[in-house]
Each structure stands twice: as C-alpha cells, then as structure tokens.
Image (cartoon, rainbow, N blue to C red; front, side, top):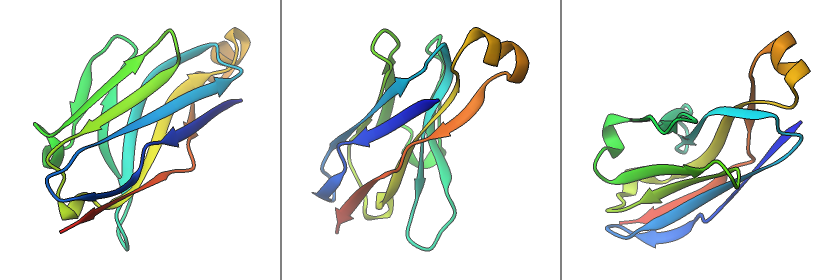
Length: 125
C-alpha cells in the first residue's frame, strides 16, 4: 500500500503564502498522477491542481496564477505553493495519488487511488 502524508498547513492572513508538502511512502512501484484536492467547510471536495509523472499540470480556475504544483519523482514528494491566499481558500487540503504497489498489482488492477489524511489551511480575512 501507498501512504500519503501532508504537511505545511496552518493559519495565514489573506494575501500571504503557504507551501504544502505530501510525502508518499510504503510499497511504491509507480506513481502516475498526483494532485491536491480541498474541501471547504460545508462544501464538496474539489480538485485544486494535478500533475502527471511527466510534469503536465492542470489547475482549477480559482487558483490559476496563484498556486503552483510540483513534484519530485525521485523523492516521491508532491508540493503546492500557494500565494496571494484568499479567505475562500480556507479548506482541508488533501494529497491524492494514482499509484501501484508492484508490477503485478499494476498489471492486474492498474493504478489505484490513494488519499492523505488532509491538512487544514485557514486564511484569515
């Protein structure tokens, strides 16, 4: 199994910056797409940004130009640089990965979805 652990959340004033990190560990054969999702209070979980193993990225319209996703494939790390934070960015941020624990698992089941426990980002207005 693949474990994902987020870090870097906290309280920040509007206009400030935070950097989230996600460490993937465990039995890892291959990680394809990784991404950040968030769930604001009382709302549905939504995609923030995603990045493939080749480096292609995708962003929610609400964060384009302010957030930057990156990954270090050698270290199995995922990052989210968040700038110009707004009150509406307040949410629990989750790390997500499409990964496989072994070549056998990949051939029989393809990539499986894994989620971290989440890290809270609170932006004060």
